[in-house]
Length: 71
Image: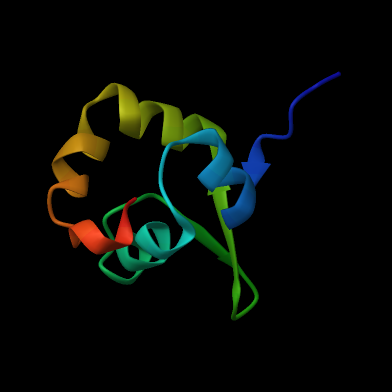
């Protein structure tokens, strides 16, 4: 079965070890690659997320997220 390239926030939180709260915080600060469908629905491109993690951006960005959001 082919994996979907685009993920919602629930799928992303299962794909990478971040809570939804941490992801929302990172979105508000433009710290993670994302797109919006319409005015509210957040979507995350698996290829962009993989590249973001590969380049070490996730670790750098995580250091800027309040610790209580990421447990």
